[in-house]
Image (cartoon, rainbow, N blue to C red; front, side, top):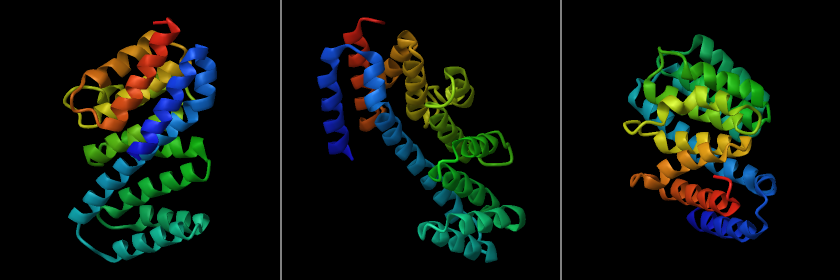
Length: 222
């Protein structure tokens, strides 16, 4: 992933000579969001797995594994049906995990609005552990970057973009990308600079932030 990320960044840097911000976003915006969203999706999976590992096993665990197998076999509708049943009848942590997995399946099927609504709802449910809520908010925000406004993305994740939050790096990236897409390069620069200045920023996030800072600097628009 790191080598692919570096190669992608070099390719974008070659585009800086054109100084066409919209053209750069049109060509590379989807890739940037896609790479970042994969990282966030991995975060959702890791947090969910840790939560699952800490919970007691039950028949719901077997039902959850069956639903995961259906999803892996691309039997999406059957998987969604099994997950919906688990949401309603499951025990312990499994209803929450079922909600997260169902939202992810909807996103993979291209049902962006439904997926966003599901992740956003999870992010606002105070019965769910904070780490899972934060991960769901991040996923909702990344789904919104291409289809929503900066304010909508901000409503989901700006509260996470604070020094004490472990997910601040991805939250800042989502905010920066949303601002960049909206043409607010000064605001985008501010978010990307926070990533660049944070010594704990993951390499991939920091590299993408620096790349976009270079794009903004080359444009002279912020």
